[in-house]
Amino acid sequence: MEAKLTRRAEYTFLDNLKRGRHRWLRLTPAYSARLVAERLQHYPSSTRVLDPFGGTGTTALLAAQMGYPATLVEINPFLVWLSRAKTRIYTPDAIQSALEWGQMLVHKRRDYTHGACEPPPIRDIQRWWDAESLAWLTTMRTAIHATQATVAQASVDLVWVAFAQCVIEFSNASYHHPSLSFRQNRQLALDMHSHDQRFLEYLHETARDAHSNPCLEPCVIEADARTLTPLDGNTYDLVITSPPYANRISYIRELRPYMYWLGFLTDGAEAGELDWRAIGGTWGVATSRLKLWQPQLPIPASVADIASRIRAAHPTNGVLMANYVVKYFEDMRLHIQRLTKLLASDATIHYIVGNSSFYGVLVPVEQILAEFFAEQGFGSVEVVPLRKRNCKKELREFEIIGRL
Figure 1 (tube, one colour):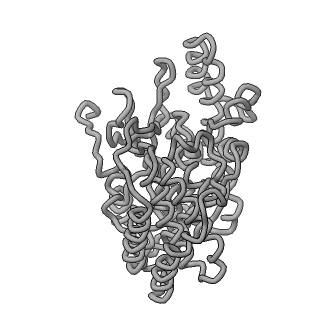
Figure 2: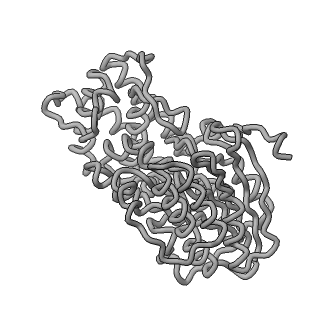
Figure 3: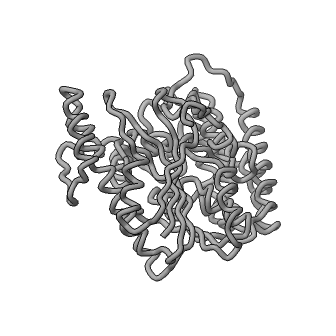
């Protein structure tokens, strides 16, 4: 069966680019609204849906659009903001106000000079944006900050979504692969007037999407998936989620331009701290702390064996990567133990996960997580291969399905 797997782009973020609010801001590792819809359609509308690794809000938004009560948990404050913006019910007045304010901002930003406006402290910022684009971004951001107190929060969020789209559109960054890269030759050369026009185009597209409101407004919570403390007292029937993979790809790395420009990061130290708190994070200080990290739970035999082989496979980085794998599985085990206490007696889980490989040692993430669910009382835990990934030939994506 695995030999016949294809990449199935319809299950990736690429499918979301055609789906209204789902396309507002992209995250390469995100799964598609189509994948969520295919699973949700088999459950009654009263089903209480939980996504404990909310990301860009795909599960919560799709559930809300289909009329399911949903809760999203996410540790990254930028993604919490984005999910709330994407899932909000917007009034016609709020949308019209955003359009009128956006038109005013195009003129207002011309009151500021690039030299008088501080860009965010992104390292090698000139590598990201040419001088013209950097001038536009800094003056527009200054204009938004200077006037946003006069506008309702819903309208403010729509404008920030359009601005964030410009952050990437005007950059030299290439976002078509999980490993961020930079274009050698810029394909986009816009003058300031063209930047203004592109911003207004994004704002009108965002406003059009905002008119299509979900049936319900989901609950979006900033919290750690290992503890899920704010969910105490609630019960859920269905979990559809995709946790971080054990592959050292940092969400912070991909999201940092958005997070800096929108004020969710002010320096690299903050980025490292947030990645250390996130499961699977390896940005900045998160990597250095791995060297000293010690497990708090007994290490399962399957994980200990994999870690031993990774340590032996590389003379310098093997120990660090072995620690990374052990910590990843300890964090996921803590999450699964905590999650189980929040589920109804007949709850079902759908976890989309990917395997990984370090120095030729394959890490069967799907099998180990299935074991963790089984030890928590899930019966008939099934692992279903979903698709190939655009990485090494041995890497796959799987769905873990389990029922209490």
